[in-house]
Image 1: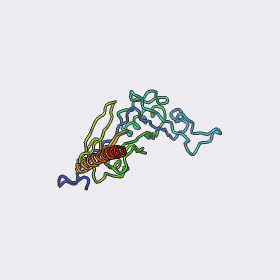
Image 2: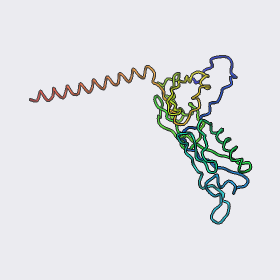
Image 3: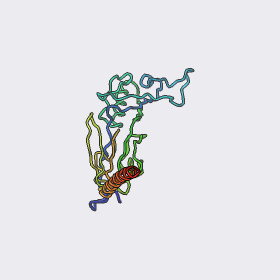
Image 4: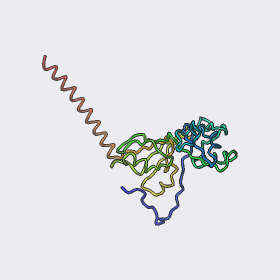
Length: 231
């Protein structure tokens, strides 16, 4: 099966990237850098210097911050900072702008430490997968799960996403190029991807189930007859 079959002769379509937004429950690792290393100490919660006063070559620990139910993190010096609803890039730029009020030319690095997606259904290796960054496509997630089985329906893949405490269901046709414009082409934190079985798989499952029931019933009948004939 071919993914993204062209539905027109225009092969130069521009696709909008739907970057995932930060949300309550995300755990962010944030570090602040600057030419004046000592000036960053209040924002990093740790000192870049060791006990002898020498600058350390590596940072042994990057502070983490959990986005609370109101969409905020409690950041040093800045207090409550609302990051929910922003992309990671937007959040970094916002923090950089705020910290620029205190130090010159700060740099911000940010990682989502608990980002994971779950892939279920007709894939070779279903499961929940931790992601090292916040930019994973539905195709990459399916790749982590070993791709679809031959019985998976590529034209109606379901993605379940939670936003503001509510769950939403999206459908994606991976045989069409328009899938690249789907709001769930780029997956968000805790997205669940479900691949439905095709008709042949459903019929096969019913046959297997009916066969199992028949075998079980037959086994019970044979056992009963065997017991009765012994008397």
